[in-house]
Image (cartoon, rainbow, N blue to C red; front, side, top):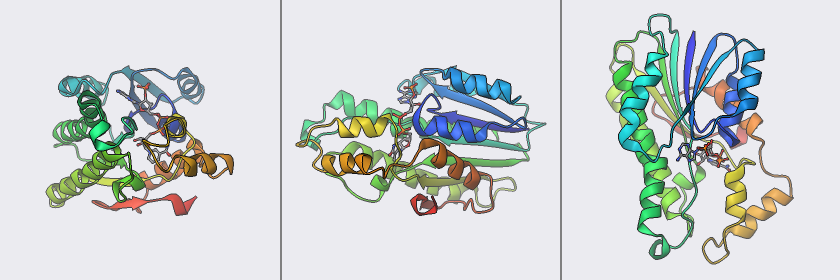
Length: 251
Ligand SMILES: NC(=O)c1ccc[n+]([C@@H]2O[C@H](COP(=O)([O-])OP(=O)(O)OC[C@H]3O[C@@H](n4cnc5c(N)ncnc54)[C@H](OP(=O)(O)O)[C@@H]3O)[C@@H](O)[C@H]2O)c1
């Protein structure tokens, strides 16, 4: 049995990833604030175990106990693979640095950076002795590499998560059963996050019109297509430990 811990599976890219993971040999444990009944029904129909754990990733102090509960569902002796996909994320606050309210910046960093860091830490700690394939996929963004006016929080959180994964790879490389890590930017996906970007104001985000144009000209990638490509990479030999990559050219 392969186990997948997936954050932000309720909609968007996370839903696309979950759809691609549905298989009788997989047990998917989804973490988000809301459940996705369509996914639950589909998984049931295809004889795949899929559980939703309701959790707000803002509450980072509760992540160790969350992961305790998640790992209670994982039969480590039967596991041929255990995977963590840090996909949940937010875009706001979108504003110039001096206009980002401190509480919104704190919220952003907790959800986009601190929560995935603590999930990785708990994952590594819980799987230390597990002799199976162990992989972490962090969903990154082109914004981790390129600064965007108005996106200081988002760019910083994604860049930080990229570097965190590279540090994990340094620490795990010589382990007999290492946890492998990869950060992947998926391209521009047609999700509610893109709707939120199109709904920002031009002064806060000067590239807003470009994102409207991408939507209107049909350039956005569907979450299902992106999800399939990410799952294929996660389970393949192309998963390169410690690397940060962009898969938009593979669609
Ligand atoms: N869309 C793009 O073009 C694009 C491009 C590059 C990278 N990405 C990355 O892809 C990932 C998914 O984004 P998306 O576009 O699919 O966004 P989305 O449609 O807004 O979905 C975000 C997901 O994150 C979850 N989430 C948000 N806040 C949460 C919280 N406090 N606690 C728990 N879960 C939370 C949401 O679940 P609930 O609301 O149910 O909690 C939802 O499942 C993000 O990391 C994003 O940065 C997206």
